[in-house]
Image 1 (cartoon, each protein chain N blue to C red):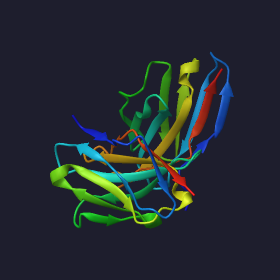
Image 2: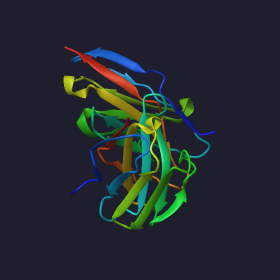
Image 3: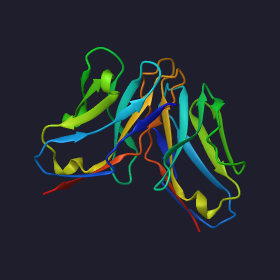
Image 4: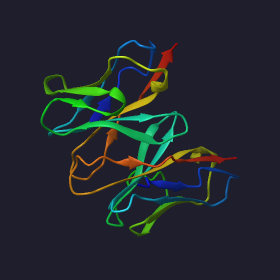
Length: 115
Length: 113
């Protein structure tokens, strides 16, 4: 079975540019999570969706970040404008909602470098 | 407040030696506990989980973990480490009915030949 698919795997862009990260969750999973991982701050939850609806975006660092989930099989995380401090690895994870013992399944991440 | 502590940032063991990675949690209700492993350049892979029943749980790759409520711990063990086990290991706790996980800071495992 296909796991969580993220694209691109690597992104290098200049400061000020718009960046869009994409995620396809596991088919049938109805919760989706976006994380950011850095050496300094570890793994941080940015936002999560249940049934395509954003439930908690308290982890989104600032208004430059936005996330959407237009349907059950696709989500985007957008940064506009990007800044060097946004450089990190961004992970998407999905799970089957309904019980807390269902684990999250992670994609391989997007390594983002803002120059 | 809910939290997860992994006291060891970095551990080095010799190949073939036993391993124990520590995890302590703070959680008001019955926790659901997870261990994940992250190899370089990869996402997090689930090793094992605990939510009820037998407090000793078996996972993939020969790992096991023991839930000790009295100590608020969920330590990960492996009797004989292989060089391919070198990676970063994360403990996580959930259970708020939201599906959100709280992750520890991770423990980096280095395996000496």
